[in-house]
Image (cartoon, rainbow, N blue to C red):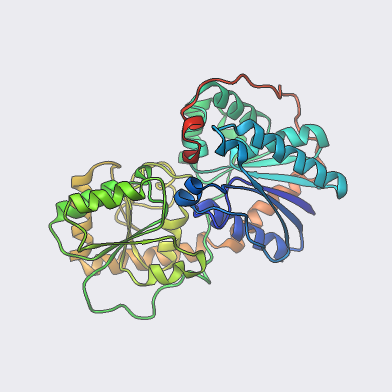
Amino acid sequence: MRICFVSRRFFPAISGMSVYALNLLEQLVAAGHDVTMVSQYRGDPLGTRVYGGGPPPNVPGVKVIGLEQRGEQDGGDFERDIAELVETIVAEHRAQPFDLLHAQYGYPTGWAALLASQRTGVPNLVSIQGGDGHWVGSCCETHRLVMVRVLNHAGALLIGGWSFAEEVRDRLGTSLERFTVVPGAVDTNRFTPATARSEGAVSILYHGRVDRRKGVLDFLHALQLTGGEWPATISGIGPDLDAAKALAEELGLTDRVTFTGYADYYRVPEVYRGHDIFVSPTYAEGFSNTILEALASGLAVLSCRSVGVVDCLRDGENGLLVEPGDRVVLAKALTRLVDDAQLRRRLAATSLEECRRTYSWDAVGRQIMGVYEQLAGTTPDTAFDPDLPLTPCHFRAEPHLL
């Protein structure tokens, strides 16, 4: 099958969705599919500082086309970039027809895929992931309308879990029957536990986007509230990296907390193996790649009762959960994990076994390709208005947050 995968964000950008896309592409190539990826990227200093920027790297067996988000960088003109996405997909299809378009995120890439299907007659599916599902559509009337059209007219909608599907339904009115739940996945060959744990102090890791919406500032407050002296690492970059560094200094944590910056994906397994506890006090997820990576790496995980997290973690069984934003309870749970080695070992062992059984890319890749087979040869739903009103939106002022 000839597949066009349309990505919102890919390496060198740091994102769980970059990880998701890479693993899916590897699965598709291994299964013998002919794959082209069209990926957006930031090329400006701000975008590079926040996420990591620059053209996407080569992926073995995949034709990679990078499109710089010049409109987004120039005043949040998403429409300009969407038009370029559509023209690129259509031109590639004319040169060698696609059988299927798969867009990652509902907006802007999912909308671009629907517009391309309208012009080419190629069926499409859209993965609803991350903040695209949590916030886009609640920000302005333009994005509400575009998300509703994508949700109503895509050939199939993939989503990480039922809690996330219910959130999207409650915000935008989409029937749950429209969704196909495909959980997140992790490369369980790449992410493995350390062969031996050190006998030194228990070490704590926050890894991922350094963003207050991911709870990084709550993590720092909780560390200070514990009164402990355990070493902690904040790995990654993001929109709140400077704020997190300033808060660590304000709270007197500079001797305990190390900021390690950009983490190359192929070195990340070493980062996990150097720690005992993974903390992800996130407010919402599509399906957390970093939590799955931590589970596969044999760490005990502390997170929140948040959308996207409750689909894979159960409090006291394979992790500990607290309410998002409750720094006092987060501090108490962290202290409990540090002090109770038996609890850490039990949670880590249970979650590792479950992760290998349920969240391997072999199983999830087969599920996604099963949806491809169902859609191949079908006629896309093109009965939607391609025109949208332009209304004020905070994402136009801060498009790097979308």
